[in-house]
Every structure is written in structure tokens, then in C-alpha cells.
Length: 153
Ligand SMILES: Cc1cc2nc3c(=O)[nH]c(=O)nc-3n(C[C@H](O)[C@H](O)[C@H](O)COP(=O)(O)O)c2cc1C
Image (cartoon, rainbow, N blue to C red; front, side, top):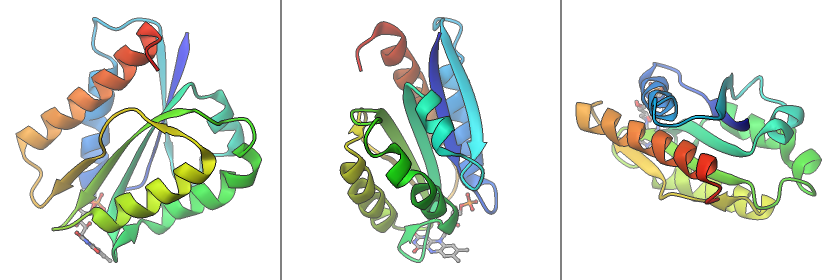
């Protein structure tokens, strides 16, 4: 079994809906041997990150940055994970009103310090949650899980 950890924060549910679509993709019947765990960003610990073979992060953009909750996650795990999670494959979903770039930039800066490895372009969804956006999230989840199963990452 390979372990896929999903760490997310959502205040009004839009990020959460995208994360759920991504997890639906991870659980596609064509993919076997992947155990997914979903945690709130305020609850995830360094031990949870150590458990993970790959990570999906989800956050809204707030004030041109990631949510405070996801920042708290990084603050909580950074030094404990610095030495032993290098190369950890990750993907990112950002739900924004009309931008999202500030959140992506801030997260990429922190994960480059951790030496985690982005394995897909960040998915940034702006404005209304469309079926297309949910489908993109589903595909991202499926790609992450399938790549992990196949040992691509
Ligand atoms: C306090 C606050 C600050 C926000 N700042 C930004 C921002 O800087 N850029 C942006 O594109 N959207 C911004 N938004 C819009 C949210 O990113 C957007 O509503 C998002 O869908 C919320 O996701 P959630 O439902 O998962 O909480 C902000 C919303 C709030 C409530």
C-alpha cells in the first residue's frame, strides 16, 4: 500500500469541494494499492507527513496568500520534516476569487525549502465552481494516485 495524504483548509467549502473531486479521482476503480487520508490543515502533524508517500495540498487564496490554516501546517511540520521528506511528491489546488498567484508563490517557496517535488502544475480555480473545475480536480487526483501506484514519482 502506498499512502496519499490530503491536507486542506476551506472556510466556505469551495476548496473542500475541489478536494473531494480530487479524492474521487484518487479512488478511481482503475487504481489499486493507494490508501488516501484526508486531514484538516490545522490537525496534520509531522507524523502524518512522514506517513505519506505523496501529498495533495488544498487552500483558498486569502489576502494574496495561502490560508492561515495551511501556513500553520507548514509552521508545524517544517523543521521536523526538513531532513527526511526531501523529494516528497506533491500537488496543489488553490481556490481563488480572481487571482491565486500569491498563494501558489508562497507555497512553492516553502516547499522548495523542504525540497518537495511538484509532480503536476498547480490547479488554480478562480471564481465560480464549475463542472469543468471539478473535473480538473478529479483528474489531478487521479494523476497523482496513478503515478504513485505506477512508481513514476
Ligand atoms: C478574507 C478573504 C480574503 C480573500 N482574499 C483573496 C485574494 O487575495 N485573492 C483571491 O483571488 N481571492 C480571495 N478571496 C476569495 C476566496 O479565495 C474564494 O472565495 C475562495 O473560493 C474561498 O474558498 P473556500 O470556500 O474554500 O473558503 C478572499 C476571501 C476572503 C473571505
